[in-house]
Image (cartoon, rainbow, N blue to C red; front, side):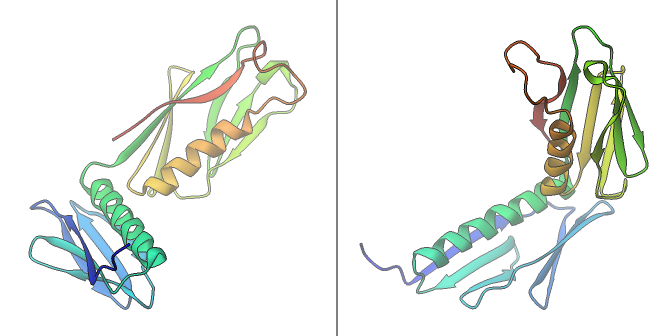
Length: 183
């Protein structure tokens, strides 16, 4: 396999977006929304250009090439997050016992899942300014925010809180499930 002398990934920015790079941390901002993330590696570097953000690596090995591609994907997600945002939709499914969903501070409380007396609790580890969780129509949950990883982890926490154990999943399908992942 031939050795490459350099890898360059260019991540484009729209007109309203701006980027600043200081001490291995990249801050992308647009329309009052900002995301900051740290990128540190001895061979891979991040710099800004007229067209956007450049991820470069000189004389890359396989691992360095993979890290450069991963960083480019993270930066594309950051740019998409500040421009459009990320939104996950979840839906509560129940057959006999009607469950109720409430957001209380930094947790989501699921009452009456399978008729259980003790409510299930899903952690919402980030503040509402980072990740916003809304319950609509008693069964629809919308998780939205700027950071893709935080939005996805919050949706996963809600889905995991309703996991049913010691029952056949084909028969007992009650719970809160991710229905769509979109921008």
